[in-house]
Length: 202
Image 1 (cartoon, rainbow, N blue to C red):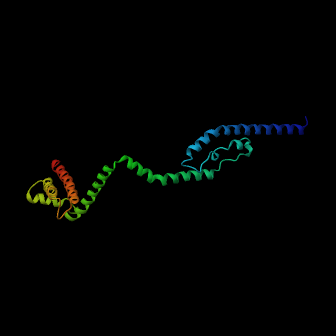
Image 2 (cartoon, rainbow, N blue to C red):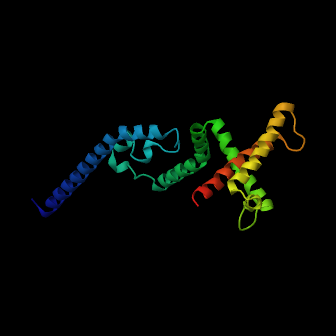
Image 3 (spheres, rainbow, N blue to C red):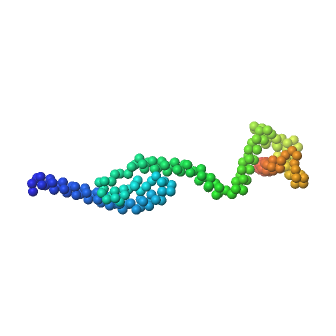
């Protein structure tokens, strides 16, 4: 065999080896196709911009490996960014649904009233208390007549109960509405509890 014939034979062997490798790789990629199509179908409702083609070539494309080009990584990054945007855009709705499922409307209304009690306490403390003690008015009244602080809160609580008894009897109140009275009653009950704990714990 001449030197030229030997070189041609070596070249043919190299080409056949390369084509065989490409064929094997194309076959492997084609084997991945069903799984990737299934994954893309599962993602379709939330990621309509993703398809199986983003990950592996179609059967026709993989039949000849030399004609297949790598996935478009820029497009894949765009898909990931779109997925992140979708998560953030739907977060408020998900959180609202989770909250509505976790909390009964009646319980939520109660929680809202508790929040209003906190706001009322802060507002009234600035009028009746002091910077050093938001309950100064109750403590001072108790000290003035020589009773425990929590008992002074109970006196105010008793006043609210008396107003409600009047409402039950007459159906009206002249100077303070029923809701305001009930708010105050709830507030004084909690203040009495707080001051009683202080007294009990010394």
